[in-house]
Structures are given as C-alpha cells and as structure tokens.
Image (tube, rainbow, N blue to C red; front, top):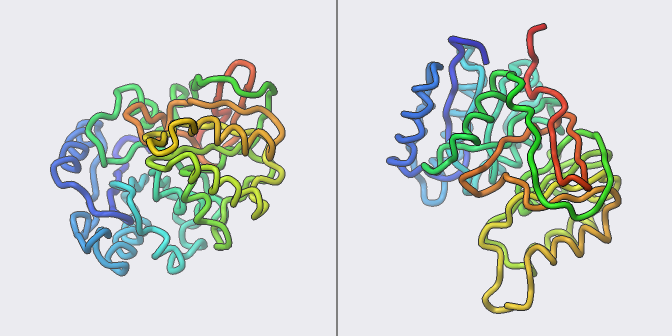
Length: 298
C-alpha cells in the first residue's frame, strides 16, 4: 500500500455496529489513505450484513476498483462462507488486492491462499474500539510492507523445537468449517495458527479431534496458539481450555508448540501474514514473520 492508495471497506459477514464502525473509519481516515466504502456497508438482514448478493457485490466492487489496494473486512460474525462459491479465484489472483480480517474472514483468507495462491493479513477489523496502538501500528506496517511489521511475537513455550514454514490458520471453528470445501485450510508442511472465542473446553476438544480425524493436522510442522477468550467452563470447572487444546494437539502434531500469543479476539490483536514464511521457536516461545505479506519494491 503506497501513498495515495485507497483502503476499501466492506462487510462480507455480520452487520456492523454503526458507532463502532464510525470510530474505526475516523481512525483509518487519519492514517493518510483514501477510504472507499462499499455501497451496502451498513446494510442489515438479521445476522447478516445484507443479502448474499449485496455482500458479494460489495466485495467484488472493491476487488475491481483500481484505486483500492487493501480490502478491510469491517467485522466477522457469520456469512462469508455463503458467498465464496461465487467468487472467482482467477479474478482475485489477477487483482492482487491485500485482504484483511479475522474471525469469520478466516474462510476468505483460506480461499485466497488455497484457491488463488495469495497471501493475506489476519488482523484487526473495525468491530471494536479498543484495539491497542501497538496492534494497529503493526497492521499498518504490514499493509505498507514496512520492516516494523515483522517484529517477533512472544507467547508461552509448550514444546521445544524451531521450524520455518508458511503460516496458515485462523479461528479454530472456521478452520473446522473449511473441511470438505474447495477452500479447506491446507496445513501440510505449515505452521498452523489458531485462536478462539466463547467455546467451552469440550467444544475446543471436539473441533480439534475433527481436524485430526479429517487429516487436517497431518504434516503440520508446528502450532502457534493465540488467545482463547471466554473459553473456560462454569459447568465443568475442572476442565481447562488450554489443557484441552494442549492434550489433543500435543498428541497429534510433531514439532514446536507455543501458546498465549497476542492475536485473536482481544484488543491486542497483532496481525499475522497468511501464506508467508514464519519462524516458530518453541523454546523461546516466539513467532516471527520472515517475509512481508505484500510485494516490496527493491
């Protein structure tokens, strides 16, 4: 994203909260890039941000707008999986726009990598007002191809080892939802990163077992775990979300595992590049991107 390039905003999933969206747009406008707002950005149809045709049309309008360099999803929720069948991987590949989002956008980011061969950015959207300055600065740096975006993230070591491999993943339930689709997350030979919100330990266990039995964990080189937000259980107080995840992954995946990394459904949601090479150091508890998410002029 060069000076003068625009950031396009659309809502391919759930409906936005107007005042929160406005606060995010005000912040974006202050960063020196023009904004292009999709026609139906503020639409609402129950739990969706407008009908499928409206959301699809908005996304494609930004893909086709030559002034737009980055497409930022306004929020997650649910809905992007309903429109992906009508998106052309060939068109996305030709347009080469950087798409940014997380949560429900996991499916879109996986589509970009698996079907179109494009990297993307798993990072903050405009669905919350409390994103930390550090997280926002990292995301902008990665959009612009600046070295500051490649700083290592620190978590808690679970299993030793060092691997360098492409980084793929996102929200656990959405990674699970990709199974059997053309955009299924392909984690063979990759570092798998996962985060989750509002899922009890048994539900995390069930989703990971599904990934294991579907073969999605085969060939995974290492695992980077972000934040498990509101995932503890009042009904089963003896069960821990972290323990459930560590147990399944520890037995299913070889290689380093690091947990409690600063990404996911939290204010300090540090952006990650999907499909770019990264280094996971299990002993140091560190994850670092080894290359930019975007092409950088030499």
